Length: 125
Image 1 (tube, rainbow, N blue to C red):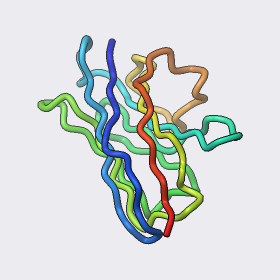
Image 2: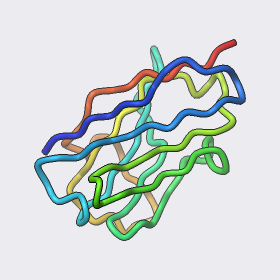
Image 3: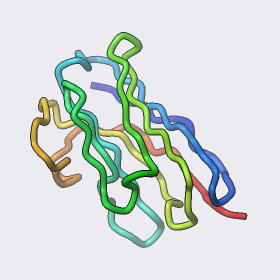
Image 4: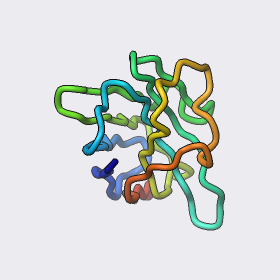
């Protein structure tokens, strides 16, 4: 199982970024992918997740601003981030727990054994 996150960068407040998570070594179609972030000095927190059949869940802090989507043909999951705020600054990670993910919660980061490397997002003027 391999995941590779990309797309981070420096953006001004109010700007947008799209993160990508490329999956390999497993059949993406059957499993949920979670997006997590970790700011300096803070614990890793859940941002969003998408189940195998496209059900999406968002943290309250990003609802209405972030959109998660998946393209099983391209074996990628995306996180479109709009109206970015300085408090969104963090390293962003994609992960999978190899579950379909039909619940209303993404679960704890500790439930996810497979992680990609982080991609850094900095929101600053």
